[in-house]
Image (cartoon, rainbow, N blue to C red; front, side, top):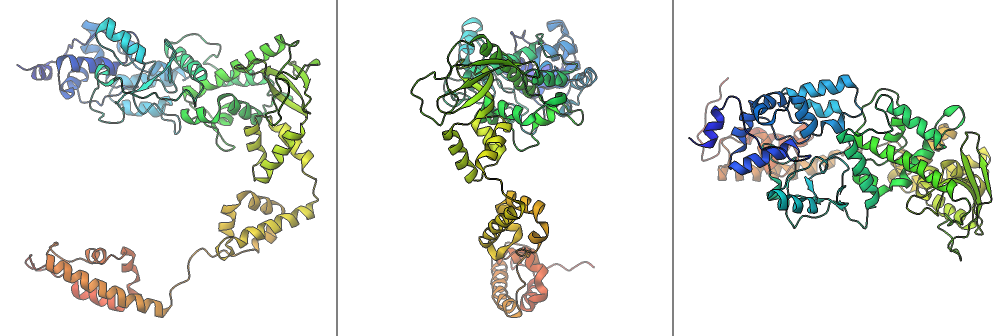
Amino acid sequence: MSAESYLQGLAMFVQLPVPYHDEVLYSVIARYISHLELQPCPVTRALFGRMIKAQIRFPGGLGALAARTYFSWGRTANEIANDLTLFPYFARYLEPERADRCLELMKGDCCTVVHARIGASSRTVDSPRNLLFCEQCRDEDISLYGETYWRRAHLLPGALVCTKHEQVLLNSSVSPRDRAWLYFDATACAQESCTPVISKADIDTSMALAVSRRSQELLYGFPLDWPAANVIGSYRLAAARCGFARRLRVLSLPDIAAAFHAFYGESYLTLLGCQLSGNGHWLRKMLEPSRPVIWHPLRHVLLQLFFESYANGSVLALERTSESWRCPNPYFQHEQPFPITPYLLKTRKNGLRALSARCPCGMRFTFSRVCISDPRLPIIDSVRDFAPSWAAKLKDMRASGLGRRKIASQMRLPYASIVKLVSEIEPIVELEQRRALLRAEWLECLSKVPEANRRLARLANKGLYEKLATLDPDWLSMTGTTRTKLRGLSTEDWGIRDNQWAERLEKAADKLWQLGSVQRITRTKLILEADLKLWTLSKLKHLPRCRLVLANRVGKCSRNFPSRARII
């Protein structure tokens, strides 16, 4: 009796290998199939009682698997889900009732809906395209066990660095989206020629390492300072303590977004799928929720590390009040590396202490924290006086069409400081004079689009259109044209098309009849063979010759096929 036929007839118990430390269930089954050289289909039926796709994060049928492996593992379905899947990572900040429902689905056969209910099916945040592994972990496993395996910590979203060896993970040749019925053993797929998942030159590996460590803490259930009961309230409280709150504890979300973007960088956020795009970005919705939303754990990780490092930077700043500092103005060449000496330590209305500083380049600002990677570089909280070089750079950015929020993000400054600087360098224009300037700019924009089409001009300069729609809507509605469709063809144009297309239809019909490639010539086949569009059939009232050709040639059998009587 072969091993496959034995497994098919097996009703209950399967002797799976003992899982290694932090091994995912997918890897255990892959090693079992590789050791015994079995086909995955009979193994899947023997383990789960039916055919189930090879799931990595949320496998289904855990109840049947626990019953069939109880005498070899002694684990319940809950223990398998918590020890051999990514369920604990995604369930860390879920409501207990929802987590229990997702766990029951994984025990049964309806595991496909778990991704949406547990918050793993985010539109932007996604798991790695390939299974990842650490080169040193692989070498250690082969020297100890003679084989290697897929680790849960290396398969977490956003985990790009091995926390044990602090090395960038490598892409394997296995994609979890391909061949969902198969299991791939890590020993055969983790090869020497695999490429790193990120480049050290493009991404700060220390930041990626911190994200990987916090993700593992969520997976293993380590205690954190962010309780799951009211985690959004904890984030709002941390933002207020970091100085992002205005009067009545209202958060300054533009300042939080600018500081968050500056802390992680655009390239790293884009790599993780957590970039802040538009005014309604996920960070704003997360800190000011209008309804209960399940957020991806990776976004919790990024927000927690941001507030923790922000607070640590404030402590470093206050501990070094007697030192000299670098100037945060990147648009001026300083003669000395540390030209700033703080001259005043004051307490704000919200109870936070801040340092006031002045640089010979002309910058006068306050700060309460420093950069973690460079403890002698202040991070600006508010600007009192801008350096002439900084103001000149802002004028160039405004002339290029950038908005104030975009400038604040690129310059890594609070939004309120950018508003103040713009009001200083741009003259105050009266309402009528501003309308005249906007009208002239709009007319110039209309002259650059075909037929002065207002819709095309709006797409070319959406900001200008919105300003005029607010300040001068009546005048705006009378400018340009609104025609979006081409004019209808004249009778002469349709006659030319009718003659040309009728000849092409005749040739196409002769070709089909000679080749005998179809049993019966249809209108659709004839139109396509003549290299015409199918919408020609809707324009036959303008094409009398084409209509006559179709009436005479459609329905005729090809030469190689006998004619059949039509059934009425």
